[in-house]
Image (cartoon, rainbow, N blue to C red; front, side, top):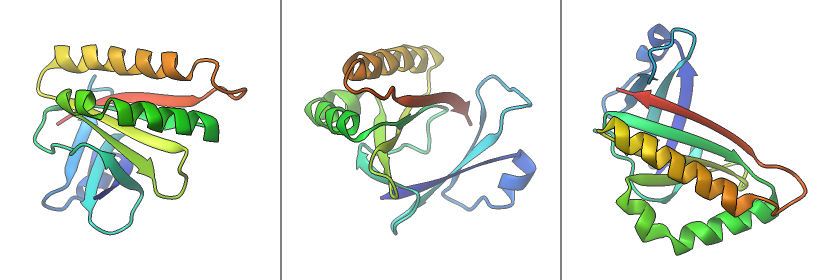
Length: 148
């Protein structure tokens, strides 16, 4: 399974919205933050699924985008493989950029604000601890919370 992501204003993205897509607004209702449209696909697109299923019925979604070097990417994938069952229990899905195997999109979803904030902290701390000192290049990360 694959997904495409699109950022933009509500008026722009709603025109591209199809049944089965997920249109999310910024968690904090910030007018300056773009909306996010997720489109699932069975054919090759922006991100390919590596772990977990994305639940389009949840209320809150926490996204982490990682840009790693090759060594960090290998370490990250090894760690994910070892913790796959644990991660699936916290409503976690992992996608890899179809054009760059060192870029990842992690999505954690919940219907509960507290769960998503707790998981956000756990995921960010785990990534930082895992990758700290693993390469000369620091890794890039971007996080954002969205809601229905």
